[in-house]
Figure 1 (cartoon, rainbow, N blue to C red):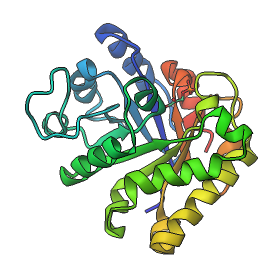
Figure 2 (tube, helix red, strand yellow):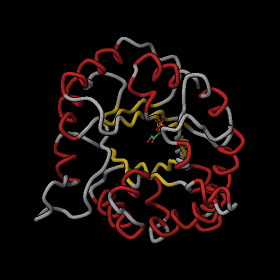
Figure 3 (cartoon, rainbow, N blue to C red):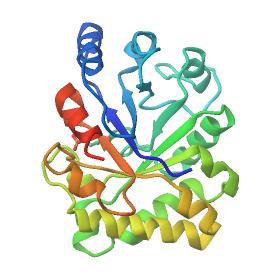
Figure 4 (cartoon, helix red, strand yellow):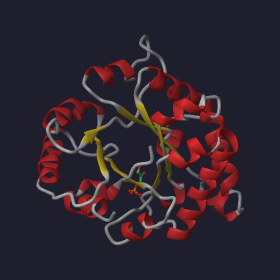
Length: 249
Ligand code: 13P
């Protein structure tokens, strides 16, 4: 089912007191849109965040997880660990994981399989780099990222997947894809899904845009027909800004 979602990816920001303070500020905001609201704090703060939002219209989600069920993977966190504290959704494939932690399509395919096998919903991120766009190669890059990590799945698996198109050149740079660039790519993503799985999957897929979304540009980006929401970095760290984006729908 296609939904409107605004998810805040806090990345490696906010210790426990800061997490509690931001959640307290978030609770003071008023939601006037129908968008689902999600926040992704750091692993160490997930439990506390989950507990303190239990009765609120905010889903706490994880930023990452390992592909193995358990074992000798020092420093890693498993799907079962996330599930055991109530987490139901995990972000996978963020460009920062790809760039700094060498997560390639093959690793991400394994992570997606593991998450889905544990009944976690996946927000799967992908997007081209600036050089790809300058070379007019952005559609091919995005298609291959989706195909390599997801196209081994059955159509039924896609009901537990949300896609997040995040052009790397727009992340944390202040440079946003224009609403037209976002729409063109989201339409292309839907066509890529349609070609492989048909319109039942393509039309129902929720596709988020991420990359320098701010209160000032959210409304225009969200007004595009194939943009179903946003994955928000910097602007998710201020409650007023985040809810201005949530309410841009
Ligand atoms: P910014 O909103 O800070 O550009 O980050 C986007 C992002 O990476 C969300 O996952």
